[in-house]
Length: 388
Image 1 (spheres, rainbow, N blue to C red):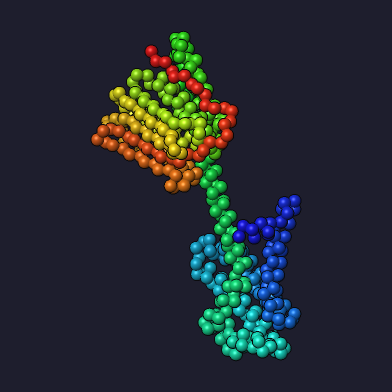
Image 2 (image 1 turned 90 degrees about the horizontal axis):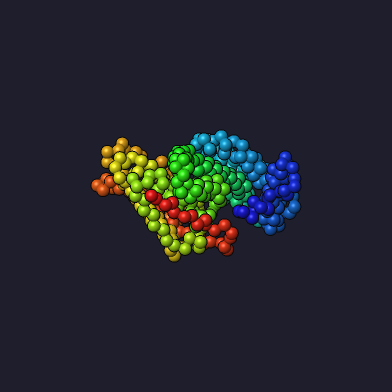
């Protein structure tokens, strides 16, 4: 199918207004050539052969454009199934009438040979009704119709399905790109405001942690703005981004929140879809730490081994806090991106809430892409923020 569509594709240099007519002309030239090749094998003579080709071509052309302009857009796509069946039946009966008329002309002109006699008179001997509309005639004619007139119509329908599928996939990707951009925007306002406020206080107090904090914030912003647009990023860049975010959260919450981050693995050996981990970690602070009045905690474990990544995020939540929906735009975005970029067998995501221990847990198992040849710009080595 792909090779056929490539064959029918006009040269790229043609004006757009000429491409479609030329593509259709190529389609019908191929159809006529195929019909002539088939019927010429019957050795019926040039006039009879041309009559068979002309009959099928007229029915195919009329049926093709009737299906393309009426049946498909007005009936089939709107779920009008009876009209759709009636339209297809109309295309068949057009071909059957043309065929019956052609056979009658052959018989009248005495062009029906002995080899053709049974084939032609199986219709003519029963008259117009019995040779065209009766179920007996339909049952015999459908096989010829399917191999002569129906293929161009099926080709049109398949092309429509392929284009619709590509269009839907393109819209889905564009929608996901918008959601990723929204996710990046989510990182900025609330988090950035708190970080800058804390940075201001450190600068006023001439705290030695201020330059390190600026370094982490710069790393985080640079990654979200300039690096995370790629389909795949080095895993060490993604983990570096996560480490920078956690260091800033440590400064923001201080000793009120225990943040335990354990990471191990050959990060430089793999690549991953960007910003897959951040929504889970952000959620741990948003729905756990921010809703807790007492001491709270966040535990993150990230390992890479044997081509697989294992992420576990656990956080405490307060039983007195108002109920909040788990996840949100960020989590839904990650779930859709996982489904789009990874096969079902290549990832497993579990989100669980344990009311008895006031714990929320997320686990993600993901097959990693091997890294390409080492490129400049390895992960920035960020120093942990010292705490007083």
